[in-house]
Amino acid sequence: MRHRPHRVFQQGELILKIAIGTDRGGWHNRFAEAVANRIPCRPGLEYGIVNLDRSDWVGSVADADLVIWKPPYMGHEFAGYVKEKIYFLERHLGKTVVPGFETVWHFESKAAQSYLLSLAGTPSPRTFVSFDYDESDGQAGREEYPVVLKSSAGAGSVNVRAIRNRDDLLGFLRRTFSLTLWDRTAASGAGRLSRLVSGFGRDWFSDFLRRRRRGEQPFGMAYWQEFIPGNDADLRITAIGDRFATGFWRRNRPGDFRASGSGRLDYDTPVPHEAMLMCLDLNKRFGFDSMAYDILFRDGDMLISEMSYGYSDVAVHGVAGYWVFESPGSLKFVPGHTWPQELWVDWALIKAGRAAEGHAPGE
Ligand SMILES: Nc1ncnc2c1ncn2[C@@H]1O[C@H](COP(=O)(O)OP(=O)(O)O)[C@@H](O)[C@H]1O
Ligand SMILES: [Mg+2]
Image (tube, rainbow, N blue to C red; front, top):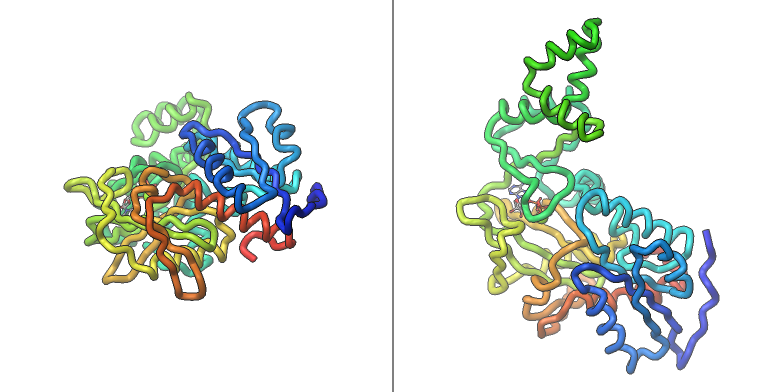
């Protein structure tokens, strides 16, 4: 690992060179504006915009102490490349990065998030995650229906659906675990041709062939949650570092249990402070730079169903203000529509200051 460069101070402030990575949605322009606005009262800040998609991305951040980057694409595959770059920036180049690896390693993986939420003892819908066919098959037999079946990646509810009965879930499991079931036909001792012929009689076989044709290993993954009834909206809390939080409600699509992606934002219903405090506490505990939490309710109790560092800046800007964590249990309201990029920059400066003092994220 490379060591942090020696830092100099100007008028008592750390000189901080900031590289701002470009993205498709223009977040970099708002980051740059936010940094520029802070320079008059925060001498020592310097910034430049860099394209981290280019082959020379490492050279482009060589002089930077702090990298702020809202990666440009969603999806599981690109998220993998982002995680690699952020790991490399932090661990091998010694940069402070927002969002850092703690924030991104579980992005586009509801499975990975479930490990963290479970570790923290966070109230969540009961969640089953397995890569084992027999275990999943057995669990399907014990469930009460409906359950909420999700792919590990995805946003806007596109990979989320209710499964109403056991047969439907078992059918899904056969299709997703088609490689396991194909492997089992080998155990019968039959030749490949007769295995293929017998395969055509199975409901999972066409899925197996399709995924094989695409060059995939059709391994299985099961993720589902108990269905939490009675929610006609979910509560979206956006927490930035261990310092800033804001929230709004998202109404379900008409006649549907799903809120995410409905576009029916509700800024009028008050946001419970304990929800923001819980999310800030999780950010602190896990060293998250920015996290959007989806919260459902059961008998008035909060349940976090998932989280993601990526979200719509316009939706957050629509809130009439944000809250600053002042002391345990206490939030101060700051009125005015605020772009999350401003809060990312304020948090990034706090994080870089702490890093210069030798604190690891979350300390
Ligand atoms: N366990 C659950 N019980 C009831 N409704 C749920 C549950 N999990 C998710 N939902 C609803 O489905 C929506 C989409 O689920 P979510 O896990 O947030 O997926 P996405 O990543 O697509 O946003 C949520 O906004 C919520 O309204
Ligand atoms: Mg969601």
